[in-house]
Image 1: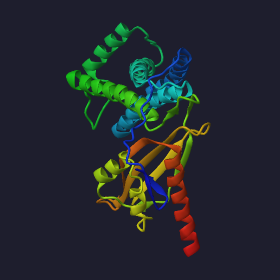
Image 2 (image 1 turned 120 degrees about the horizontal axis):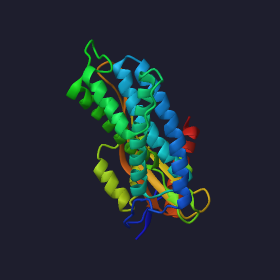
Image 3 (image 1 turned 120 degrees about the vertical axis):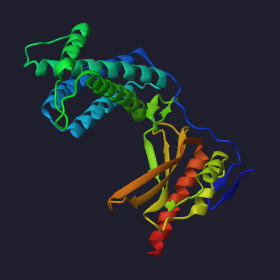
Length: 297
């Protein structure tokens, strides 16, 4: 039986997490293809020039990861515009474009390396060029010129990073966002409650919220420590009053051994589906907490 505590209801009923429906459309896929082709062509051109002219290995590694993640983000961006909610298709497209951006970056890199006199598009010709370069090496690293198997291993690692980061970037772009199927639009509304006290028992808090015991949030009260706190976010659809979500994150701000700021965010729950009454009561409680502090100040 439902009861209220501090305005926040305890329904005692099991709540479920939002999952993408798997829906997609040919137009959505076309948008991803156009976005991916244009974007990856630009990224691979920049990468091809930059990786050859920048001599610092660490920067080159960041460029490699950036190329892959940038590719994935482009695919994710296209998926969001095209309203694609199918993670399998998203993963497949990001994998394809990860391979494509790897291929096109080799085309540009070899073109620049051979003084812009040799433009290779045939993959077999590119492989022949790679085999030729592996004999004498193509660049220097820490005073050492990698050749043979060692150079192949570096290039293999580069390929894995680019393709892997592409898939990761695309999936990350749509991770945490929800889609209202009734309104055919992404849920854009968000409301963040005042920071609550830090919760040390994440599993207990998660279980309570999953079972509809939302008054556990009021028990945390407002945080008195800006370094350690619990962040609560409400989200929902702007177009209707039928789609609401709750996310809770544990935040820990510390300093590392060098004295630099370090933030650890632990997702306790993400996009737990709640109803309008629960949404309104949690939001109202958060707003009243802020007003109470204003009155006490």
